[in-house]
Length: 172
Image 1 (cartoon, one colour):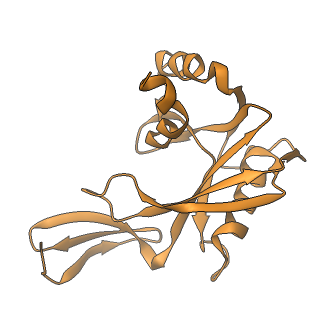
Image 2 (cartoon, rainbow, N blue to C red; image 1 turned 180 degrees about the vertical axis):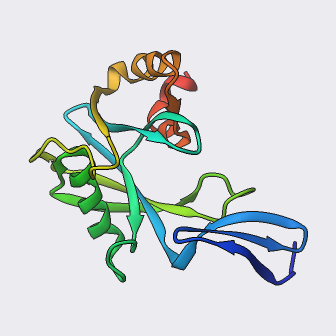
């Protein structure tokens, strides 16, 4: 256990590089957190693909967004519903919180709240904001493993959170 004081080495608009003793890590700035959305309807998962600067390539992901980056005090559920519609064009009748998780706790203090979106209705094309260039995929769960394998073979990065949907096939 490291009881050293936390030191902010550098901070930008969205992230901060920090140090605690000899341990260096990154966190979200200003208390911003993320919401990750599992949107499955009629045996199909709604996925997004977009260019990610840190990877230098496109990445296949569950829809997600920042909570509190646009409106301070916004709830996770409200933010997730807004992001789902903005990114994918699907409006959810219900958003249910499934818990908080950490994707890379040895390097990043950021966590995310996983939510389930149900009662989906397609209301627009989606695609995110002008600078996001998001491609929306509606993939049958029975074809998900093959779809991900084809994307990987094409050079698309696969977000670790995709393991949530792939685990049954990977562990079979």
